Image (cartoon, rainbow, N blue to C red; front, side, top):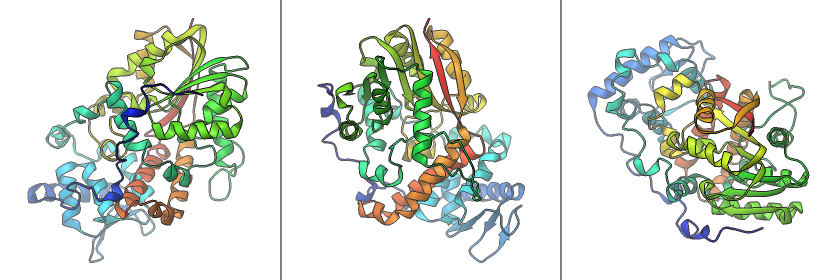
Length: 428
């Protein structure tokens, strides 16, 4: 295995952005704006009356459209909660959870209610005022050149390999699994997460036609599982990542699997890739590319594939009308979890392929509902191992932030606001 000579200098010696080091600029102070607080409070009270959920005030007063077992938002510091919501919209709502302005015993249920009613949460006339609090993604976070992209990757994936190992399964796959088989009394599949992750990877490899002797390019190494399984089929794999920490662990895992002689791991931007390949794969990496760079991403794959080559892509997707409405928005997920990210729609992928490449989709499957279960298992494990997370040096706010992120994502897939697709594409 080898690494690109330009790889390590960009981020290896930068301090990892660990929230436990106490850097939470402005988070403790919700600010002061009585008018926006009152508007946000009125909107929230009106929203919960239309939904099967409850709003519980500190004095025990309950309002909303749900019964006694419905999901509930328990207000701890109402003025701070509604001030944040009024000033920053849903970013402020998430920050209120992070600092404990509100709490819920059923966080996923609360977020599912909002996801199912996303179109009606804000009255239509007020939607036109979105620009007053949504200024769009910071220019430096929008994926552009390799250095900007690597900084975005560094802020999430280089938090700590140890952190991810605490809640991921043995496959170390950080993407939707694909479950099959019986479902238990709790409504979850009885199959292990590792088995479901291997089925997912194999599904992508099959769509890309990976077999013994294939020359394979992977865009987005993760921690190496897809490259390892491709190499176990007899393929020779070049896999690209922008995360130095991921690359190091992927090399270790490839050595342990006995396939390191068949895998080259490069810390390199996909646009700098060279060579010719029979197959390419990319599993939930396109979400970090950015709308403006989708054409270049697919053109790169098209350029690198040999005639008759195939591309196996797995991507989170959202409805096309929601993509059009929110593609320039700055969200809680951008600010705290995935800077610069944007989820495509199926239509956007198809249109980009048609306009900019010779690639065409000839196979597809949706595994979106399985992502809800995948996230449920991750969150359950994360919370069960909270003491170990803290032992790594992460603080209370980080733990609540990560809890909100996993619950937020689970709710999105459970309500089908988000989906996840595997695509098989061919190059003539």
